[in-house]
Amino acid sequence: MKNYITVIGLEVHAELKTKTKAFCSCSTEFGAEPNTHVCPVCLGMPGALPVLNKRVVEFAIRAGLALNCDIQKFNKFDRKNYFYPDLSKNYQISQWDQPICLGGHVDIRVNGEKKTVGITRIHMEEDAGKLVHSGLTISTSDSSAVDYNRAGVPLIEIVSEPDMRSAAEARAYLEQLKAILEYTDVCDCKMQEGSLRCDANISVMPEGATEFGTRAEIKNLNSFRALERAIEYEVERQIDLIEDGGHVVQETRTWDDANGVTLSMRSKEEAHDYRYFPEPDLVPIDLDPAWIEEIRDTLPELPAARKERLLQQDIPEDSVDIIVADKKMADYFDEGAKTTENLKALANWVLGDVSAFLNAEGITIADPIFKITPDHLGELVALI
Ligand code: ADP
Ligand code: MG
Ligand code: ZN
Image (cartoon, rainbow, N blue to C red; front, side):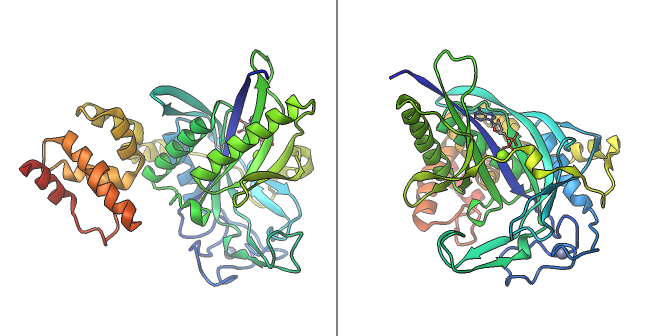
């Protein structure tokens, strides 16, 4: 058997933490009774007109700046047309050829090796509604119900370059992205609630090949574990296929978590299938550069800077990476550091006994159930 190289690019959808939807004033709150956060605009009633929520643009700029992107002064919305019952208007308002951000990057570290993953673009779009099937899938169900509460909730889609070469790198990239979105406070990143979702484009090529192989796009990856397992399965499937004399077809597949396999959903749609055209109901966006600078000035310390700061304190890099990846834990650590000078010991306590307790209880460090305040932990470390 030949050696194969894996190539991965991720498309990540992040729901923005605005109070109201992208183009109407309905609430974005999660978990309400079905179809209670809806209005003529997000239900796609004929004649209803969208009005852009300024916060959506602000959050997209915030995320773009934190991800080292070039913010595009001129950008515009387009209609992406497709027919599916979760889409009330039969088109989705998205950005096609002139998105708000281009060309960023994220730095990752896997097994001690550093690497930069390119970001191709970030665009703004609206979420679709949610289908609830009576059976497992739409095709095996007698009926399906639709909840439009999520329709019109603002999203950014962050598209990476095909720069990742393993499941571990893809995971590290997604973890880093999640941390940055949490630090900048634009998304609550609850993968189990779907506010951060990821599609993985995966291909393989024989070592020495000069062109990438044909990719499959895997949907429905709603945990880090699912992302890693799906990539590992899919890489093996593609290699087996090629070794058996077959070839990979470009298609959209879904991850079946219960059975640990990817399954074909549909052949890959091309851009022309969506008949993109400029959204006639919204004016293009012409950003004021002063506003972009104002937003830049409000950016908090980002994970990379925080990491550098903690590394200066003589804490091992593996420990720093774990603390910094979780904003709440990093904030706790910084608070604790006010009552002790021994930061290495503080890090050991946070990652050792404290984390073991939190894991056993199934809670986070910011949970009110967790009674040990950071200043108390710092004092304890100082006493020891
Ligand atoms: P589409 O909308 O058709 O999925 P996009 O440009 O939005 O196209 O996304 C393409 C994604 O696929 C990007 O993340 C890109 O890095 C990745 N990609 C492109 N070609 C390959 C390939 N041969 N193998 C793996 N990933 C790829
Ligand atoms: Mg895609
Ligand atoms: Zn609405």
